[in-house]
Amino acid sequence: TQLQRIKREVWIMKFGSITTGIIADGLVFNVDPANRASYPKTGTTINDTIGSNTGTLNGTTFQDIDRGVFNFDGIDDDISFASVNSGPLYDIGTGDFTVSVWANAVTKTNYGTLIGNWNTNGLIMWRVATSNVFQCLIGGDSFTTTYTIPFDDTWHYYLITRSGTGVTLYVDGISVQIGTSSATLASNSISYIGNQPHNSRRWKGTITNVQIYNRALSANEVLHNYNA
Image (cartoon, rainbow, N blue to C red; front, side):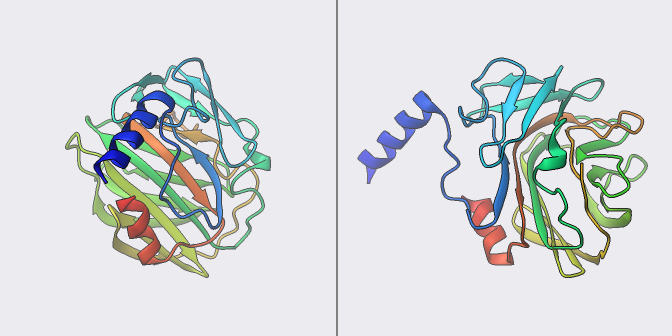
């Protein structure tokens, strides 16, 4: 009803988003600058509202638009998670997983990493500099797609799943590329948002709502989360 909608909007304005509506089953990591339990609009610490991981904002700034986003300048900004070796993708091995990121790319930089780590057994989601295509490195397996990341100052929902050895990239709730990976993901699989430490390959634009599941979401669940 209209009254319920107004009450919800008042709640969000006062307390911030509480990440309602998304699939909870298997969710092991959630950072959301619109959620005051995750980030209180100030300071350099962000909390994972599901696990015990904490991140540090390194030059990254908060902006209170779209209920809360992080700005990355593409030069020296990132969010680092020093203790992630006990966190979201730790020791997942060759198991299933889902990683999703809401991001907005404004200007091209030399590469642009959404999340990443240059660990041999880590995971990286980034844009390849020479072609602007989306690439994912999973424990050393290269999953290069034909999807070109747009610089349209528009929010897009990037999500990758692995089920068995099957890997799928979804953009805005729709499957755009299928591949394979049987590589092992181990400790420190993800330790940065907006960067990976090899050659400082950083994102220029905004990022919000980074979530990790310890299972592969179905196509229907991916679309549900996108709409939510």
